[in-house]
Amino acid sequence: MSARWLLGGLIAASIGAQALAQQPEDLHLPGPARSGASYLTPQTRAQQEDAFANPGMLWVEQGETMWNARDGMSQQSCAGCHGDASSMRGVSARYPAYDVGQKHVVNLEQRINLCRVNNQKASPWPYESRELLSMTAFVGRQSLGVPVAVKTDGEARASFLRGKAMYEQRIGQLDLNCAACHERSAGKHLRAEEISQGQINGFPIYRQLWQTMGSTHRMFAWCNTAVRAEPLPAGSQEYVDLELYVRARGIGLPVETPAIRR
Image (cartoon, rainbow, N blue to C red):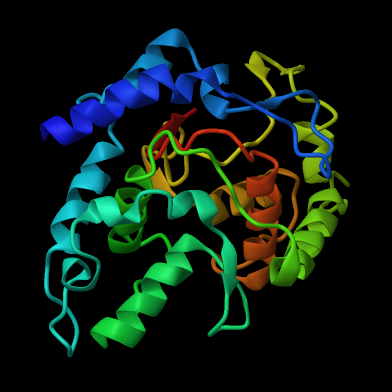
């Protein structure tokens, strides 16, 4: 493991674990924004903050290799356009974001695939593939400690409002919505588990239940299934809109990629 990742772990220990941020005025949070890391046991939180012990760093390391690899018909690498990956610092903190070329909001995974298709003349990576998770984790890691700062106004406003409506819509056989758990019940207990605010400032995450990395959309699909609702396809615009809204609920929280969650 390189010294750069060790330094990143130390930054996360001093900034990321604080997990407090100013509540955005147009959102309704049950108190200050609180990262999912603050709900972890001290042992798991320490594992997340240790770049040598965090299992998600295996994906980050693969992403670093891919960053410098030539690919596609253009035989261009990510580094060939962007230079050192430090140029990506702050990028993941701003996504999802409105894309002028696509004329709608895209998330970081889609932005990466757009670069592959348009610039490298390569095929897009499938959602939840090791390649896409690795590159997303690597790019996200460059913003470690940077406060989430997505835009919810202007051309992104319609997407934000659709995401908000989806967050509040009751679905499934249990007739529940996201807000029932992560807004009105945050801090309460479901059996032995404390219910979190459902913040996504650490994605993609290594989830202990999955024993692997997963995207925000995999988490959304898992939650849909938990309330006995039909999950949507990963990468769907509905999930991107929801991702923007949930990400906005954590404005000000530091990026923790790759986080560990239960």
